Amino acid sequence: MISGGKTGGLLEWAIFVVLIAFTGLVGFWVPNLYFLSTVLMPIPVCLLVLHLDARYSLPGMVAGWLIMLFSGQELISIVMVLHYGLLGMVLGLLVKNRVSSGRSLFAVMSLSAVLALISVLFLYALTKENPFVLSLETRQFLEQMTAINQQNLNGLMSEQQAGFVKELVVILEMLLPGQLIVSAAISAMITYFLARSLIERLMKYKLPQMPAFSEIYLPWYSIWGLIAGLGLTLLGDQANLPLAARAGRNILFVLLNIYLPFGFAVVMYYFRRVKLGLLLKLIFLFLMFAYLPFSITVLLLLGATDPLINFRRLPALKE
Image 1 (cartoon, rainbow, N blue to C red):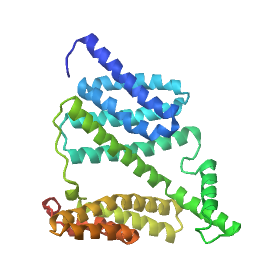
Image 2 (cartoon, rainbow, N blue to C red):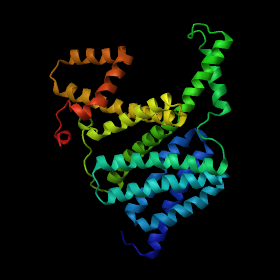
Image 3 (cartoon, rainbow, N blue to C red):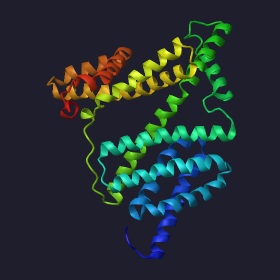
Image 4 (cartoon, one colour):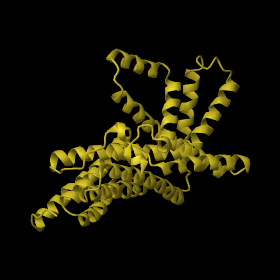
């Protein structure tokens, strides 16, 4: 803890509390900036833990919660402060204890996903409003977009158009839990890199170096996630268990979003290691984007199988 006297510590604590409250209130005042608000809100809490002490973050969260009540949405404010306040506190403790960058990033993204699920279930328990059902505004938006793109849909009749929208709504609603997890993890990842940059620039902390993107990997036992997703999906379809089938499909949806960047890491590893001319590399990149569906399929397969095959012969995966 940085000592500066009791009065100085309280003043610094008050400044951080105002920052926490302001970043949270921005999301309520300007709904279009809500995602940015959730990205920024954990950062003042993280800095508070680093600059003062973890004990200061708890009353700071309470004070931030009291200020955020002025948004007029008390329940959402409480959930928001607890979610992103706890995330910021954990991030600060990870940095303070010199936990490796890879493990810190994984912990923050995982915690954010878990807290997001807990938050929506908590809201559902109190309000009885199902968070995994598309709102009327979203349904109307899908209908409008379908009507606008009707020509691209081979001129669907109104009955067919309604059926198409209905199937699209079913698919989107089925994957809402997975979308929530992915968006929460992405938000936490952005938060981590922003916090990391501020900590190094403002507080002169020497943080552990991030691993090269081309050398990131999934542990071999991550394959059990794929097995669980496929198993639950098949079990739900065969035994007529909708919840199991939905859980399996959401696990697969989350894994597809994980496998894609890890598969791209494998490609980037060989793209850098294999000595090809600049022209050939540019042609390779052009072909990747020109045949995007095929490229995405290859990246997903690489991401899913690399933990077992270890295409890059990384020492960590041989253990």
